[in-house]
Each structure stands twice: as structure tokens, then as C-alpha cells.
Length: 231
Image (tube, rainbow, N blue to C red; front, side, top):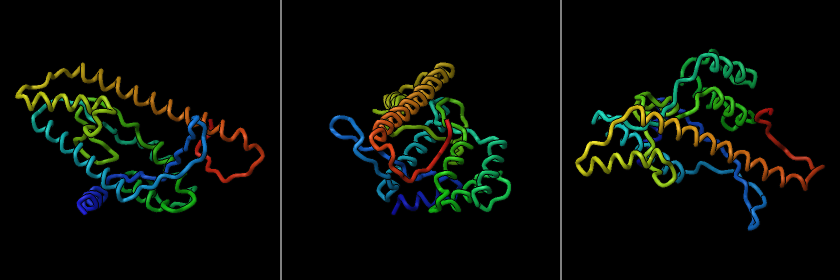
């Protein structure tokens, strides 16, 4: 119940809900593709998501109140040119929208696309219109979440930026002020952003190779597909 209250409040405030079913490939014991399935954004997933977002935002606010420099999760506002392109594409896809200028225009596009055949294409267009999220110490807002102060805190084992935040909290808990070095944190933020993008690209290439190997034995079959881009 608490998570749903947080979710409703967040969406009403103008956060973008970009959750769409994703295709997850299934591998057999030898690492070959045995099938694929669509992931669902179930209530249990939403509970975890909302509480993680709340924790991340709370920690960012905690560090900001103490006037500390820390690694934030940053997401710049989209530029007007990309928003214009999104508007044109959406109208071509049958979405009723005028000029796309605000986050609420984007929310309306997403809302109209839900459950329609063009949903996947529209969501991909929205993602392309948005900037890439990065790490850095600059006190800027997170556009998609519509939060002024936000950091990654909940995955210290998986993500290095989260570990940096935990180390700062450990210092504060011990009564010491964390080292404040803007240039060093910027370098770390750039490094983490680069590694994140490289990991994402590597994952996509691996999935592509696995699927090509899977489809190599099914030449001649007809299947339904969604074309999301041209390379």
C-alpha cells in the first residue's frame, strides 16, 4: 500500500513511466538459446522500484543537507530538436499530440501508446529523445524522475557509484567528514558512466549473437517481429 502511494505521488508529480515488457532470452546448460519470454512489471517489481527510488532520493537529500559533494545520478533535460522529432514521429504513428514541449506532453504520448501495436515503437522513440543518464558531482536534477537531488545507493555490490556513497556514509557514521574533491569525483563519474555504457553495449551485442545463433537453424520460417531500428 505504501509503495502504491509513493508510485501515484511520483507519477502525479511528472515522473516518466518508461516501463515496457522486455524480451529476456533463456539459455540451456550449454549456453545456447532455448527460448525467450517477456518480462512483466508486476506489483512486486513496483514495490521494489518505489522503495529503491525513495531510498536513493533520501540519501541524496541527506548528503545535500550536509553541503557535501557526492556522485549523483544525472539526467539532463531533452533538447527541443529531439522533442520536435518525437512529436512528428508520434503523430505519424497516430498519436494525437501537438508540439512536445513539457514532460507532461511526453507522458500523454506514453499514455496514448499503452497497449497499442505502436507501443514499442513509441517507447523507443521516447528513449531516443531523452538524454543518457550519467554519473557526476554536479548538483543537477534527474529529468525522467523529476527529482532535484538523486543518487544511486541501493546496489553497492553491483555498482561502484553506490559503493562510493556507502563509503561516504561510513565516514559520516564514524564522525569524519568525507574527502571533498570535485575534480576527482568528476573523473570517477566519467569513468563509471563510460563503463556503464560499454557494459550495456556488450550486453546488447551478446544478446544479438545468441539470437542470431538461435535463428540460424530456423531459416525459412515466418515470425512476427517488431523493427526498432536500422543499422
